[in-house]
Image 1: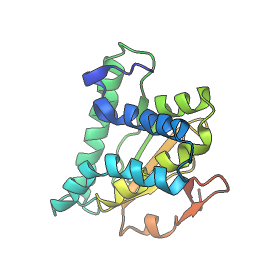
Image 2: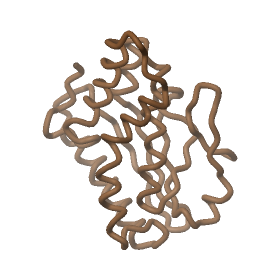
Image 3: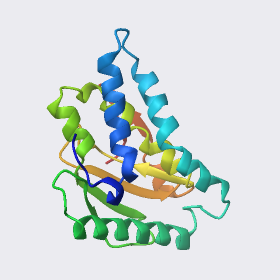
Image 4: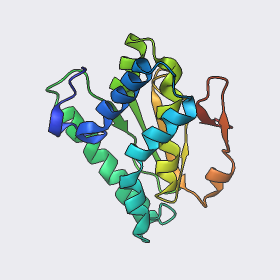
Length: 187
């Protein structure tokens, strides 16, 4: 629970969402509760290896316009496939804005089954440990994630991705709010 489409799940792969739900179950089952850092580390150990593999390919660098455009294309395809395959009403809903080279990539999730599960089961306090993993994932692509909020602490999970050497990245430093969510200043 929740069913998100099995092997045809576009976002987070078949297991990504369930990996997060497993972390919630682990937290609930243990008498000695893991810390937020423990959950973050466990999440990253499952979530980041595919991004770390991309980092080894030296040409995956979001500072190059062509690579940024390719990443944007991949996100557009994922959003289109997610809309096309609506066999389940519990999956992600992703919207991607048109590509503007000087502005980077803008997209958002209007629905996140992980956040919905956390809300339904009173586990929202653990979501920063899961949501914050998006930042190092983008760093593996030589990108900077700029975000105001997520589906867990707002209405949408907004993503703005730029090259990590861009002026935009320099003017939007990462901060931490009182709940532990990472966000970017100047939004």
